[in-house]
Length: 243
Ligand SMILES: C[S@@+](CC[C@H](N)C(=O)[O-])C[C@H]1O[C@@H](n2cnc3c(N)ncnc32)[C@H](O)[C@@H]1O
View (cartoon, rainbow, N blue to C red):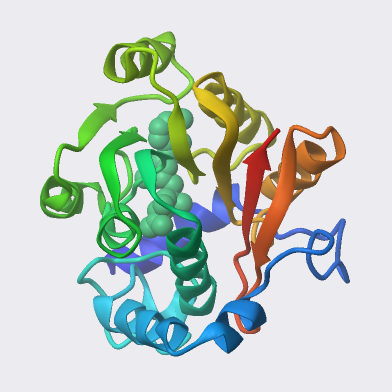
């Protein structure tokens, strides 16, 4: 089954964080509970996400109605909170994502948050990558780099597409190795401005990402604004404001 193979592949590169067990969220930041209490929009988003389909029911659980569809690799509570949080802080001219898999997450963000233009960097090696042909293609004006985010060509691509304009919202969910996640963060930061929102996915499911998130905060590279950590099968989403 494709979904289980994806889970095995993720498992190989994801080591759940042991180092920070007991840590709740990074300081005084917005949480899922805050967005849940803010109004009915959180619940609408959560139901929409569950009904949009997941990459693997067995792995992501949390009320998804089916496998497939947008094939999301998200905890619905965390992702609903992220969508609401970003919408409240918008608008954003330019969205850039490293690690698209099916392209479903970018499509939901495009519909629910909105941006003038979107950029995807993905190596096309995920088992769901062929679904980008439908999902990313539904995002108006999307520009895609299909290749290694760590290559010089990825940076050149961003220079050519952005033409000096900054990224307003960056979502990093590509290579989850220690070296790889830092390389992706550095690539994103090259094109960010003070105030850009930098989103890291898997701040709980992957130790390398969690350490990168905490390192960015400790070094003052970002000011932490939000951390969304679901109760069941948490993956963890950190949102920082580039200093
Ligand atoms: C965890 S998945 C992304 C999940 C997706 N953001 C979602 O929410 O459904 C990681 C993605 O990054 C891609 N990837 C991993 N290493 C990469 C690299 N060095 N360059 C480009 N893409 C990479 C994988 O092929 C996969 O599509």
